[in-house]
Length: 314
Image (cartoon, rainbow, N blue to C red):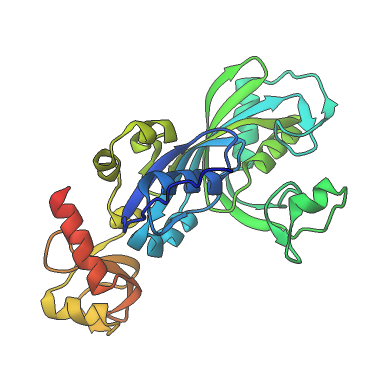
């Protein structure tokens, strides 16, 4: 008879964990492993990172989950390695080889090809993607040998910088808007060069104001004590760090938390992070329109007090 596994007691954990996701692990699997390590009651990630990609995966715990969409919508930065001369069925290293071509590409030619894809472009999502059609992921159709029509999506490539070259493998530093398919970009650059290409490696290094520099691996977290793991968590407002700050007095803070609009002598702004009179009293997010501060996502008064207590003991 199999012994019953001891039941692990869960606890309220609040904050943002910058995880360095390993190769071969899905975003959800990485989330569940981190959630178990923290014994967290509530957790969520901020958008999927393919199993074949490594790097920055911000995870939100407790009250921070209210603001996970902000990181999902943020611009992303990647180190993408393109293998020239080989195209595959999936546009990455997992697929079967479709074609091999000779490669004779100079740095100037690569730079020119990258510039062609910089700015606002339209991308057709790849069949091997998690995008859904009639409730079914596109990769499920692809695995069944069925190709469905996909509408092009408009994305923005802010910059593409050449980092290094090793034989026919080129590593590029790409900053782009959400929803950009880097393997589709790699495939396009390969065709523009006339030799074809696929994405052989991908590492996410940034998401909005967050960077890989402060990230931890699952192995590192597993070796920490619970107090050390808690200390590795960033505050909930980390996700909004590049937004303008609005500070309210006690009366206005209470009204803001109740969802009441407040008229303030401030310029209109699409996104602001809002605080009470105490330096670290984060209340939530909002926007300013017509001189009025309007709430978007709010913490509860209990969550505000809980976060203040956590910061006081950190």
